[in-house]
Image (tube, rainbow over all chains, first blue to last red; front, side, top):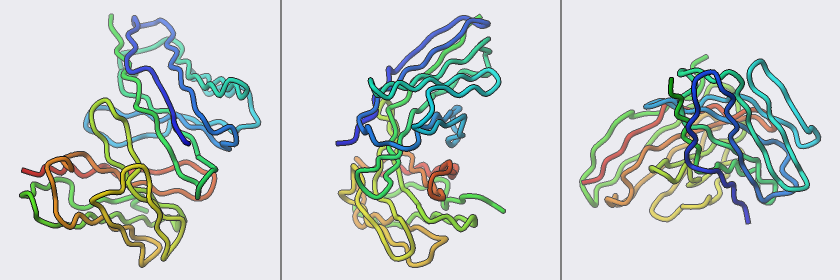
Length: 112
Length: 111
């Protein structure tokens, strides 16, 4: 079955790097996504990675994909207070009709 | 180009009442999704659609029905609302392989 798992909380100091981890179950997922949700708002796409890539970098964001372990991570360099939000990992589950499945979300708290 | 629009944004229902949430997208996307978001549980897929006239069940479909009569609209219905359906509902749409665009959400309270 489909399942995406994330740790629920992460606390970092401003200026440090944050690493948010995610594991997924569908080895044939073609796309894996990271979304950000600020309080009271909808979801905003941060970045995504194709399954044939190991790494993708986009300014302060680095996504690493380990297909063997079905592990995805999002690294945020030089974390700022504006990065405080909930981060969701999501996969396109190919087992049935392109379902877009989300993890429970990781709440990132950035403190001075 | 408005993206994904959800109506209404807020609603309070009494137990047993019915209502329909509307999701409209103007991007000609094939896929549309309805999720509910509850604290600590992330987004759970209720129903989704891979094209006009098609619908499929997600993870938590019980108590909800959907219709996709027109490609741009995906309706979520609650026939007899229950307090357990108090949640924030999000609609999303996407083209195959691309990012999913989300609406701003509907906050529903069932008393």
